[in-house]
Picture 1 (tube, rainbow, N blue to C red):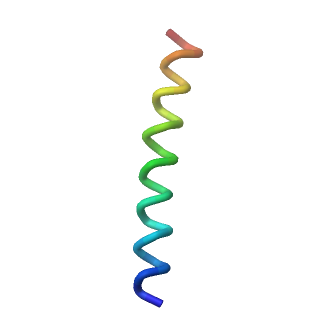
Picture 2 (cartoon, rainbow, N blue to C red; picture 1 turned 60 degrees about the horizontal axis):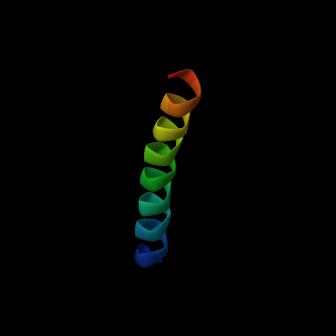
Length: 28
């Protein structure tokens, strides 16, 4: 169960970082 939570946390962080990069490309 803990591994699943860690996996979700990593995916969430990667998603946020990817979102920021995409927003920078669109806005910039």
